[in-house]
Length: 358
Image 1 (spheres, rainbow, N blue to C red):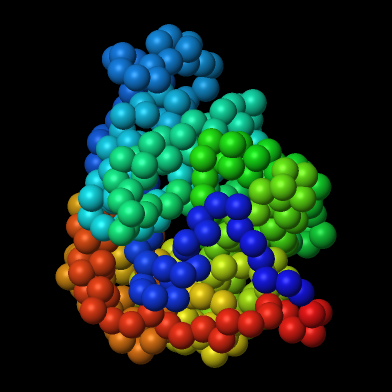
Image 2: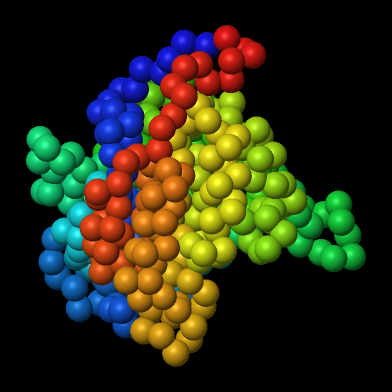
């Protein structure tokens, strides 16, 4: 199998081989800080660039909580968040598209807006990265593909183990549209993240590859799973090692873990990945500890705590990309960037991916 030639972010593999790269932190946590109400989610009172006017004023369903809609109705909020993370030192920022598939947006009766949400979200992230990029420190847009609220492997009905509320084909079609819109909007990297069901991830990876074949584009792929509890397995039952072997055919630039656990609890699973995924880079962006409703961010850890824990990962030589998930803020990302900057990136045995197929 020949080495991949990327059409975008060609410098990223070299960066990851030379230093630890910084991914941004939580989008949802930062959106919550704006304390937007139903009217603000509909875009009322906003007349700046990209204003939607009265487009959603009379939409028949509540939209508060549909964070992806804010890319259309409040692009100023999303841009402010992107720029705050870039100013804190992030090399890579995620698009505001975690739930921007037709499958997820159907919950709000906004499936028809999914393509527009992805395209505009990528444009906003692209503009922010272009503003902060320098020759010495280029910034990259990660087009985020989230897991969807429906799973292809797990029954939604405890009395009917064989029941499913979504098909592989429905997921593939949704992820294809999402990928196409993200790339056309300016994404540099495709990030399939917060994977709790490997079959959902396979649908996403199949769709991404299908788009690459159709378009001639070839972007680096980052894959990030989620270990949901102390069992060390993702929700659909696989261990971290099994998960890696299930997705390595996609030849990702990096494999990693995010969400669910704080850094302290995530460490043994990153150590496991380090042992089995020797021919690819590793990413890690944990939550800011465990949920704590008394905290401003909703999570336990302050920036000094999270950065100290993530620094230990780097000191052990486990990671090439670090950042934050739920409960993390630009302060967390700035502290993480400062903590890991003196430390070496993880060494990778660069050769053929999937040697037995070479």
